[in-house]
Image (cartoon, rainbow, N blue to C red; front, side, top):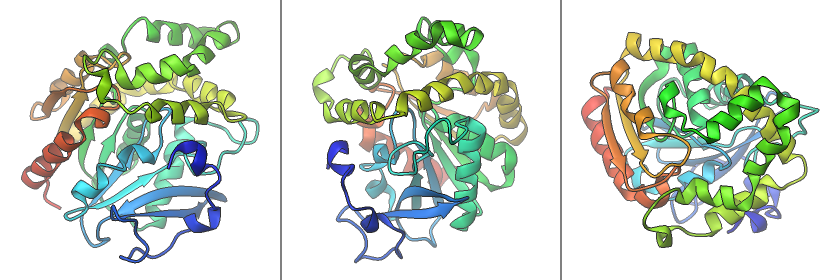
Length: 313
């Protein structure tokens, strides 16, 4: 089902229901909405709730749908929960004037969701926006985090590739003067480029990936929401030293699965994790910013091997 069709999918069918064979799709995934602090939060779920949990945190401008092919490959061994942030996917989308879209608030929403679901410990898979959400969870509850799977999720300055980040830094310094330039990043071509990047195999990418995301980005109010989050992203860069200090102090098991054709996040950002966690396992993969597009099965294999070897649940 494409994003455009999903917009008219009956909301009643998405309400939270018990996980069972009858309530799950053929992929083993079930689809839920729960109330968190007065807002509906959507999440995908697979696997037994008695199994170790992996919390899957999506990037911009995607949603939990990016994990649709990954989850069935892990559900025999793990409990997987993939939420949509406020303003994304099927979660509530209040206007930017009615809700303060910051990464602090997105993280608070996911933190409250984990409490609602009774998730007391978990590994975190982080892509893109998943890093500022995931690291906020880790700093708030270091005892809960069993491992980090880092997939094109930056925690070091050298991970931010010029010239795109030069434009964003100018926006942080003078929002009013650079707002229009930031909004050009919501174009169809740049939405496509986030997926394909510099991959030598563009034929491997389903065009629905970016056409659906482009439709999402052009819903009423979305430009304002995403502009607020891009402006707030400066707080993440300022927090990099605290994220790195967390890594150095707690030495969580870290698996880096990095799409090397990413136009916005550099390979140097992947290698930098070794400075903080010397035992981090780093894999540079055939893929772009959303490495699951091209390397889904490989990432699943790497995750299974890594979690079985490195994590004492």
